[in-house]
Length: 242
Image (cartoon, rainbow, N blue to C red; front, side):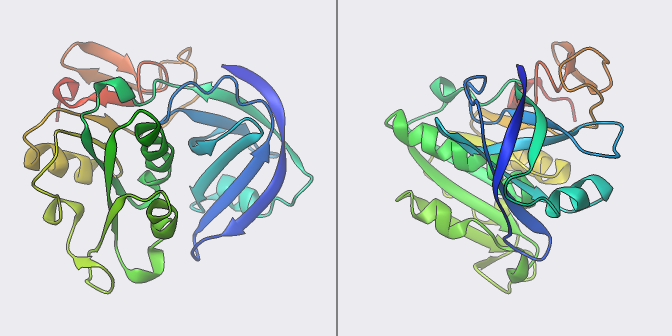
């Protein structure tokens, strides 16, 4: 973990509610896809945890949904402004655990960290298959970004307005050896019920500090209490108590 200031170079809307923020700065604290940053925003007491979508030697990309005052402030950020970030937080996806053909299953704003994961799987010589779920066509984002990686992409919408009608669990390919998932809790529960293989899931919980000190995001698992900001947010399927 490192605290530092990062500079905004791009902040654009992908959908009416979802934005993509590009920041330049030190990315050396990021060691795995699925980690997150905690952002200090003017006028907000608590930092805002946002998953890391992608990163390189020059900076990182965050994709976030505008849902409250904090993210409303983020949507107003302009190039040249700087942000105070705690970077490289959490326990991300362990690519070495993934099979040669791994499903990356995302719902809504659970999709962004799976983009960095798909790139990491490709770099490790593995074959990711993206299954991306949305409520309706107007909410679809990053489909083309995944396709540009040269991987198979399946898109579902609950109302059938785009892609395959239904939920991600209605469109899971039969041929895979492992899965990684991130999205709403009901989706993650359904994925666990539908899949026969082991897998990794990224969970979400309200966080105070973001680095394990306040214990506010502690959840019970099969191996005892774990802090999602520290031992998580990524946990193994078998650990999770529904």
